[in-house]
Image: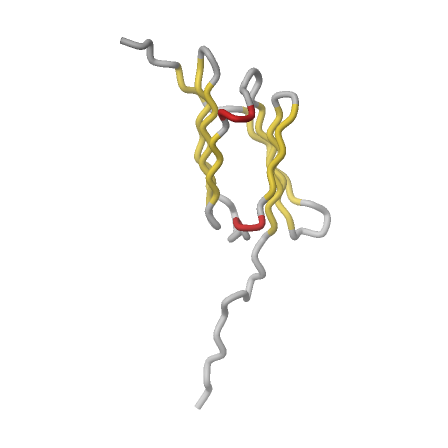
Length: 100
């Protein structure tokens, strides 16, 4: 039977740009191969799983505000996953209400 890997949360740093329209997320994944990273994003959260030989990094985190997940970009280099995702417009999808 295969030995089960230890699961641990990676170091995650997130911050907003100066224009307050994008969220940047940096995830430390030392020793992980790019092709082994699974990143799934929704407008309100993201899930990440990244195994290496001895452990598996896993995390699920919620966003503070609605995001444009379909416009997210991610880049991985030297053990650091960088994600950039824009915020949704606060009134996007709003409907006009008729006032009587």
